[in-house]
Length: 216
Image (spheres, rainbow, N blue to C red):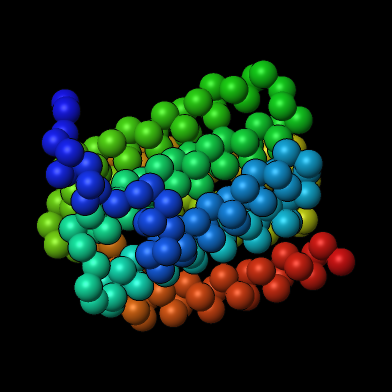
């Protein structure tokens, strides 16, 4: 598809979208995701949990900011939506998959679990991009941000359960979450209300404090 010189003249530059505040929130979440991946690979799991939950917090924040901002163009909204989807597959698909692989000392036996998690995330996001919400406030299938919230909570058991027992809990939970992601259950859009965003902010600070203490 070709574009006219006039269309090309008024097309915004790629980097111009970075100044959009919701996109800055999305990129901040991506930075947290990179930290989560790094610490998962290096085996500093408590730090990885902090990165994972902050990635969710920034993901929720970008939607809240976007809905409250005035003057955003159609291009701003479309670019932001696409950026959000691309970051989501990294934050909620790649990162948890790397976490379970790392906890299993990258034993190839855990590759199928990692693939199932990542495939479910890709399918879930593709379905949502195609069909959107099932109504104004509910998703079809468990939204992917719930995966990180659940895994961060589940990882609190790592310090109280035997390694073998916790491994079963972690891998079983990962598979259950993947199944829920691609199921037909209807789940509410938790990030859609300021009250839930405030609650997540409180939870993020609390869980970050707990894991920070575990790192000391």
